[in-house]
Image (cartoon, rainbow, N blue to C red; front, side, top):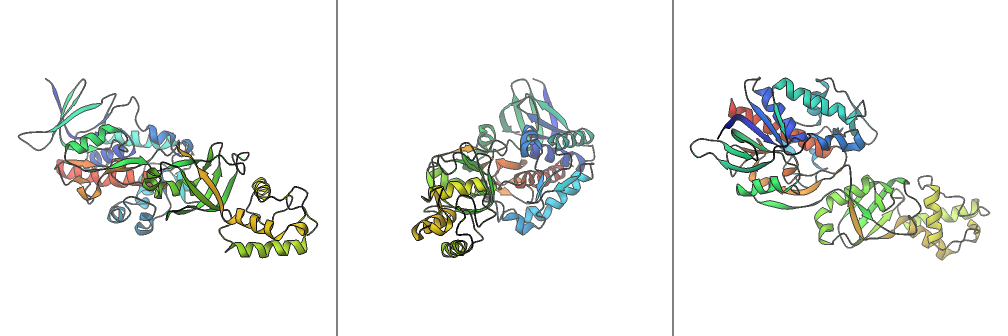
Length: 416
């Protein structure tokens, strides 16, 4: 039996796997031997499709403490990690390799090329320059500790490997491979459930409005302490957008228990303090624009015209009704539609660009100063295999860069 020997083996050719391998190899100054094993035929596929093909690299939230507030799982534990390697370090890392990033209005950061291939090329070129070897189509079937020395024996269908340090960067634990390996070394795992998903809603108020976005909304789940704010996008199947995705991330486990069947309330005008204030606005409109059709003119520029018309109709106000003829009960009903519109959720769809799960290796069993297992010396973790997940906006990639950098640095120290 021929056994290939390497200083470090990384299982998983995604963002966290590549970043850790590059960091480790660069820290060893080319004197180490780092190998990435990827079971698929291609590497960095999630990078390629992320952000609509643009790759949301990170977020312009540079201070560690505010940054942690964007992580429903891992919030407190990540503070020290982000002090070691945060978004500013990520920006510097890519720009030092010729990749300029830009900040969009909502804080998300993308390559100025608007092309995820720019990030893929940077990572692959950096790996080649650092001497990292990459093998695709190599699924690891078995891992076991070496008996007479520190390290691990790995077996694929075609080959056997030995290494001193081993990193699991296999992605979310929906991918059973990484979860099984972690469990085999005695690690507890939080069950994997979807973290970023859109909501299925079939409702006449939004059925004809796919593609319409309201930039400022507040969403809450009836009977739960779950709320979020942000843009809401109406889709062919229901609701999506940053506001909905934040709600799904913070409520991932709660909504899973509810089997994705529940009620939400949407406040389409969160900057208006109350329904009573809305009614006062309507009263002023009655006096100033009494002959104007309600359907034709909204007092609120932030409400798209087509949505306004659907909410007016839902309030029972006829198309030919002028503001002067709207009854007090109808005004109250319309105000409720604007401030507290209830919708029935009947299911969910995974957000195609951000297929993130919560769950994974419990953080109290990982030394987050090094990303090394507390159960098995020489075993490291990075990325989504840990019980860490962020809301949409570049935060999950930042966790990949941060954990990958810390793990790579410390694997190099063991191999030096």
